[in-house]
Image (cartoon, rainbow, N blue to C red):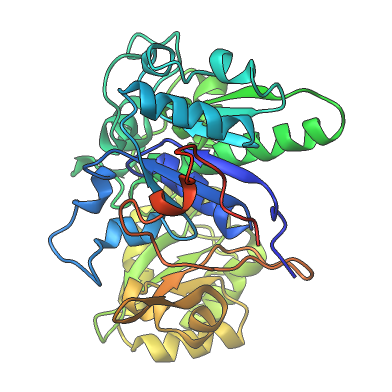
Length: 386
């Protein structure tokens, strides 16, 4: 059985991270994706110090299930090829700076004349009305401007960038929702339409519920590190063997359970820690007490004890540990064949009972589909949908 988007045709003009991740998700779900690249290739082909079967880890992570077509979009030939392919496309993706697509004759207004059913997704760093609209937008800049970076860190560290490109990954998820919503509307009689998504507002949206805190109170949340401004205990603690474990208490049931496991049942209802308000007021003493108890035993002991007593906890795993876990390997990692070998690639975290997604192909070599897409007459044609 083919994926749920089998039969849809996606023409991807994007580079870097956010756009390619969006088209990769569509490709995983069954769409046919043509990735248009300049002769130098997508910049992500060169980001990284190592090569794995000729590709960087960045490019591998973002570009499976695509066909690479090299075009010079500054040339009339390249522009004509995109215009021709767009006539039969369901979706076009682009992440040019404002005005560039129009200068190339590849904006929504130009392409919809020949294909009124086209879903055209423009992914920007900033909205057209933003004072930053013509500035380059990379993930750390967006994290800074959006307020996300200000939320992250502690009072002593200052603001910290998340050690994963949140804006680059959240924005394409928002874009995918927009695209599939437009496809659904089209299936119900609406014409094609322009879908606009920008990294800044998508990242601000991702600060929930902190944005509502700010709107309601007229002030911004302080940096709490691993703690929570309104709940205690809510932190990570170091075990005897040097590991870390996160413990969260959000109601009295879990507070009583934690007290029981830690061997301090007398604190369940006492006048210092008996309620959440009391625990917040006496947080420093609480943190010292819990920290000293957790430090007395290894992670394995606490994992068993907490699991058996319904305490909310989680060991702090490295990425290597969690990716090596049998459940994750079996459900999310797909061994993907490259010329010369295979490597595990993470799939998308969605299960379908009838139309499962599929990693059909490894990331493409630069321009590998040019000979297939351009016919004997020199005109571009969509590859056969299998």
